[in-house]
Image 1: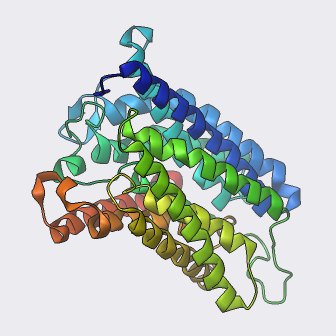
Image 2: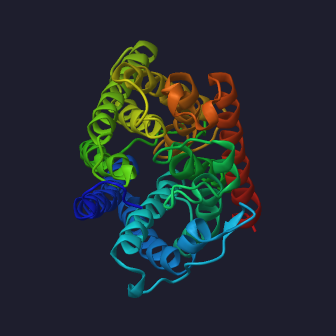
Length: 375
């Protein structure tokens, strides 16, 4: 996995970034708890803890092998289940880092469906997401990544998603959309004349966004799989997109509502981070700003769209992760360094591959959400 002259430094970097990605659980916990109503705060918080417990065990035992094991016709892995210590430090570091990614995708769902699902049902959702939904799509898009030889069928086609705009974030966002539709809105959420269901602690959510922003440096930076020359550009682009996303969302919502909206600004920051995650290794800084600004507008417009269709997403997970993840994945072809496209394809050809990946991710996640989790 490590190709630089200093494998010990690479190992340290990947493990350190894994620690930062785990901290995202705390960020999501703070953000989601603040967005929910006070009476349901502990319910949201404990779900963030429990889905990490479940995903840790399930991904070690089953998910990692399904995602990165020896490929069966590019569809799923068939080896590396429940790996033991004899696999060596490099393999275990990769397992640890990817396990943190799995928990991130799983925990996105908890905020979207907050306040209206049984705790036992949510545990089953976390189990299905960690064991089936995330590893299978992850294999299609990232299979063979650790060996730097594509084996997943989407990866073979040249699909690019550097750190998971689609693999991690869109997948969680589309699953959230399916569950929001299945479960329905909170009682009184869209009842005419009913008092609004507002976030009870926006300062808490703001701190959560800052924790997520800081943790994202590990999320994207560690996806270089070593301390390479690409790391500084990745970190700079990550920061620029977050700042641009927050300001764009704040400004767009301010124009629409005639007042600043803290929730939209928070989600604009996260949306910018989600969007740049697919391409932060291969775009110039100005493109990161454009991608982040667009994501900020997408977040606010997507939130208005869900409300129009009476879809109750408590924290905005669908527009932030689903919509912005799709936008960021497509932006690879629009702004990425064409010299880094697999096979020397044109931008239009790469856009077709990216669009296919986005469509497959959406279809797969909605299908799992409506069929398997619905059952």
